[in-house]
Image 1 (cartoon, rainbow, N blue to C red):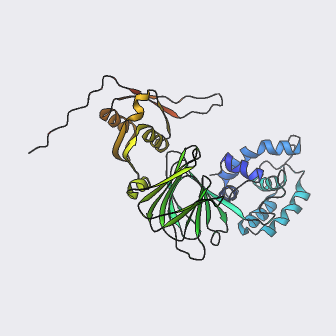
Image 2 (image 1 turned 90 degrees about the vertical axis):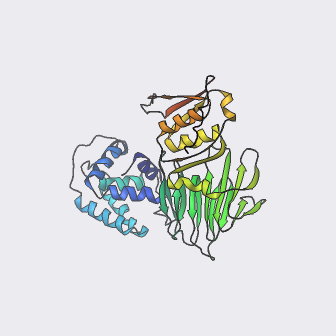
Image 3 (image 1 turned 180 degrees about the horizontal axis):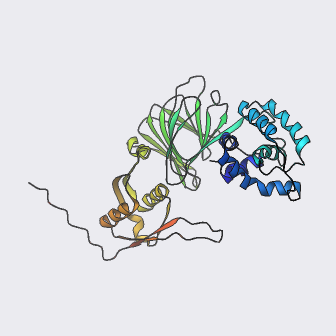
Length: 356
């Protein structure tokens, strides 16, 4: 479905292949054209600087534009220049899909990537609270975690370079002639073909690379730093201190998220809360500093948030409160909040003796 974000990026010329595909699909069905009508009315009236006074049958033009877009050959867009010249004064609200391409291509960005025949970009977005599997044009597959974005150039096969904001697991197709590179936090991971995980959220102080199998090389963009990882090793980068360390780990614990599992191994509560917050699209607020030193060892498999909070409170001196979502001044609902406080009256439940 075409979203306002797809439309706005396309209109400004800063669009991806996914944005273009969403627009193309919207132009090919009734529901899509209705959505376009909503997005385009203000732009159309602003462009013409007048109210719509009449309508005209532009079915012939609509068929031509559909043919051009489906063909997807940049040189074909020369036809749009002639269409714009002949019909720029026609206000066809009922056939807004025929006009949307002309407005988008000529209103603000006559030097769009398609008209200049430049390389386009494709982006893969995963909404908060979900995860998704992806397939890249070279055959590489992987998983994108909640709230993550993966961006790459088209064509891709001979330029296997992706940019990541978030967390992703990659299973890279081997190609000696074309190394695969993941760019994150001012660093690059170079591989020929292997499986690894990268966690690099913009708002996190630490980025990580976990190698599941094979070998990878990690360098900085300035060319002043280089290191290699073996399987079952984790590379951690402190972005504030610009310091790095490598440690031996069980890689499967760090990539289990793609199977719906959350695994914590002696991790402090703030880290647990951060990962849970992303996973369930909620905001955790730790009120008391006494909670920062609590560490957890646990495995959760597709559990409800309420059940996880109950288990956390049973195993440590934690009280929690789930606040209702509130609406801000822009009529948008904010994230649900989970307030964690120190429970002074906590008593650890006695362990049951095993039955004999």
